[in-house]
Amino acid sequence: MTLSMVRNPSLALPTFWTLYRRILTTTTQLLLPIAFASTLASHLAFIPKPPATLRRLSTFPTNQRLKSPPFAAVVDPTKSFSSAMSSSTSASSHPAPPKPRRDEDRVTYAGLPPPYLHWDATKNPRQAVDSPHPLLNPPVPIPDPYGWLRDDSRTNPEILDHLKRENEYSQSITSHLESVREGIYQEFLNSLQETDYSTPRSRGRYWYYTRTFEGKSYSAYCRAPKGSYGGGDNAVLPKIEWDGSKETPILPEEEIYLDVNELAKDKTYCSVGAVLPSPSHEYIAYTVDYSGDEKYELHVRNLRSGVDVALKVLDANGGKCGEDLLLEVSDSIEWGRDDNTLYYMTMDEQQRPFRLYQRRYWNASSGTNESAVETLLKEELDELYWCDVSKSLDEKHIFMDMASKETSEVWFLATEEEESVSSSNEENMKCIAPRRNKVLYEVEHAQNRWYIWTNVDNSPNMKLMTSPAVPDSADQWNLLLDSNDEPLFDGSLDTNTFKALESVLVLKNHVVISGREEGVPRVWVYNVDGKQMRKLEFEEEDYDVGLLGHYEANATCEILSCLIFLS
Image (cartoon, rainbow, N blue to C red; front, side, top):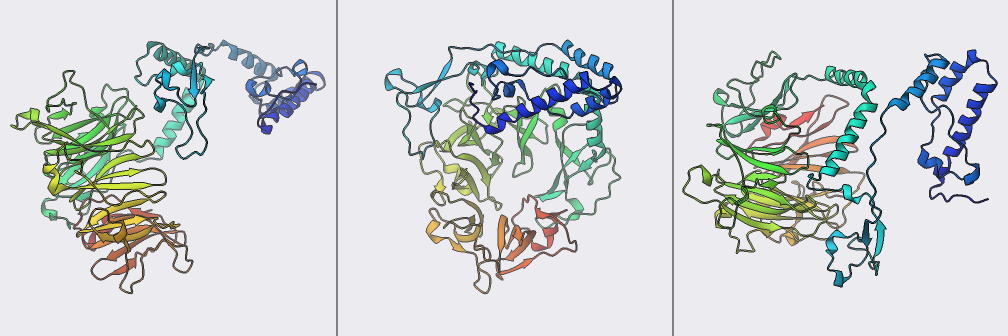
């Protein structure tokens, strides 16, 4: 007896269920009275029927393989046996699913590209970079009959037509579930407070927050002047007296400076990435994706005039390209020291952020006497590393973070030097510590020092370290100590002092740390001058706690309640 080969033994299990269904079905039809058939049919509805692909992998000989059982539809136990059978036959009225054509001659190759064929080696399957095994030579062709369905440009009419027919088929066979979908959606809405707001957070002269409104799908970005509540970094959030209506402002003189609902009008898709006010608070820069492919447009809006500018690709002379192409970036952007400078990341063919650019005088087309200048500051060509741009909380450094799953590296540019960068200078940015295999680290800056949390020296948990704010500082990293010269977080698994560090917020005179102690979420506050660390205590026995985003380095310990969420 010839048996079909099964790679995974668990794939043979459906054979048992096939037999079980066959036996029960035959019993229902031949032995039991019709009066009991409906009850048994309801039992059959919960017996899984193996898909056809698994039945073909069964271990029965080909000439003895069992046929599909007569009950192919789920039976409603509330209906009679005859009506259940009629409903199962009505399923055949659905249209047939669309089938893409197979390109039987299409193959892709795995192995060493022959030099005489001039293949692009980066586009062929290969082993991992650190694999000890050589690439296959000669390369092996792998059938790829459906490879034609990939089109990164999303413009192939044959593919678009097939996707349209698939969507129509999906809607057709699930149309009877529309009332169920609507019921589930309404149930979700009933558990939410649609008209709501986020906690206002201090940023310069304003409180910044977001609002949502009943019946609208997207958020609105808002701000309100601090006014009589006091300005500066240590302003205390006033008591919010809001009646819960969408018409009432959260704070006096509320201003909606970006309504995503307006951006999404007449769009089939809309996703906003970063939204950042400029240093003077007269502009905002934001990224928005209208296609769903995570390629973002970069816009700058004048908050006084309302003029919205989408940045374009520049030619070598700083002018717009002849095709007037929109600039495509990742969702990671930053302002420089003033309103004239922007930093952004562009992506490679795999949509991996890998190049950091600086654009000076982005608004050159708005009547200024300067020409836009775009400078490539740094690029990462290793495909294992994803990159993003950030700015230190004290706004003195621009960081380019490069990280794989196990290794990271951070480069920096002092904002006071951003006007002196040039495309001919390969040292525009400097490295804080060169990458070391399986060493992860993150960096913040305050008072001319780096604060680093890292797993260096094979630490099982993250250490909290510090060093002078200089390039190539790895040899000067030291554990951050308390007044007793004991490390705050040494990364060890010592059960007597076990604390795990998760995130760090570095202020001018304090370091706020979130993590876990004996598995419980904790927040600690470290006084830099006094070298004292205290743990925040809460009355609740069960809670979750962590750090919110914060924008002002000069904030004092007294406003930490604005930085912490408790649930």
